[in-house]
Image (tube, rainbow, N blue to C red; front, side):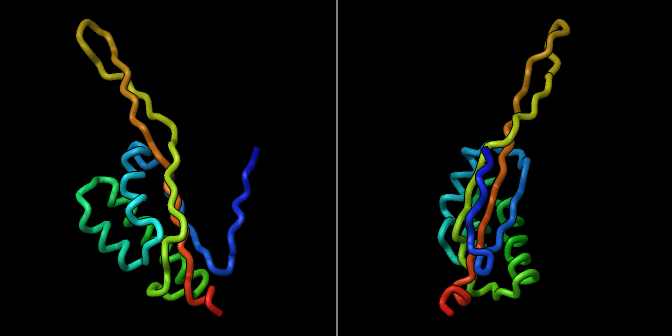
Length: 125
């Protein structure tokens, strides 16, 4: 079954990052802190958090803001994060060589992150 996204295409812009090599649980810990905040406040929070997943999320928020500015002409000062979600991706499976010619499996989890920005100025008019 295909779920189509129902968004207002005139006020919302999104960016998606796929196959980030981080577990979805660790990424959700950071995403929950920025959901519903303004663009400038989000960047400050992500810069000060000590987690490794903050760097791909900062890149994704910058990309979504660039999409909003370039494609729709929105001002970055009036953007808020209306929706932020993390979904689990495929596990990357490798074999680590061990003693006596054996191999132990290593499973590295990945995740997909989606950031949706909404412009408050367009919504007011």
